[in-house]
Length: 356
Image 1 (cartoon, helix red, strand yellow):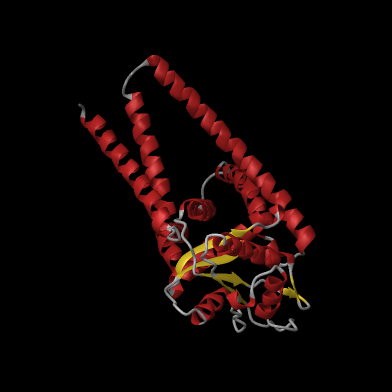
Image 2 (cartoon, one colour):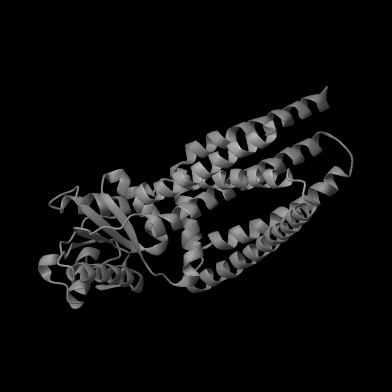
């Protein structure tokens, strides 16, 4: 066995071990973003090691097959990039048309425009570099490199977030909840909105499923009264649950909260046992962040999602990702700092050299 083969086998085993660790982690505590990060690294290690091992066989037909597969993958990535940019632009326009031009509804459109702008930026930079040399070319090159590095880093974080969110919903352990907390989502007068109704319907489904097994949980509709609301959300939600045939003794209202974190903290206070297993019913795009909040307040359980209009999911999912990035902004700044500081140092050096 050659040293290269031994190294490839080591990294192959390490990659498989990392993926297995992540799968177990998603099952046990899938709200942790590190499992998404490590799963990507593990898969890349497996692919790289397996490719190297196959290439070392020196079989002509195998090398030809690998070349064809590589071309197909590259073509798929190219087409996928174009399709994703187009999808984001179309979806962004749809969300704006249906939901209005509020900043939170512009994320999908802005992401699509950014994806289109980056390749055109390459053409511009080639034109700039072809004009000759000078400090301003160094400045432009470093600035563009920073943009690419930051974009690549954000894309990696988003892929990690996407994997973690999907795996959390698909792989996290199921159990029988003692309580189901339903997160509020606005009212129309004294009636629940369609979005909030879908969350309540999800809780009703869980209640009836558990009731059929003789373990009916307590439902906790959670939501305070906003400045533009005539009644607390929790009260309107209780009325909806009663209309659906849920017994009054199986409902405990929480009507003081104004944020998701307060929803969970205040709901925990009306539970007889704060450590009892709990489901948190929310919209499907919000499940992962709700799980993170559950961990912060010490609730033992998992989030469950209610279906949302398809056109709204991409924009809402991007909004959830942005919120998580902002919550961990100092970590991301530390990761980005070396490249940014290095580029700024190079720019300073170029400016100094030009003036000497």
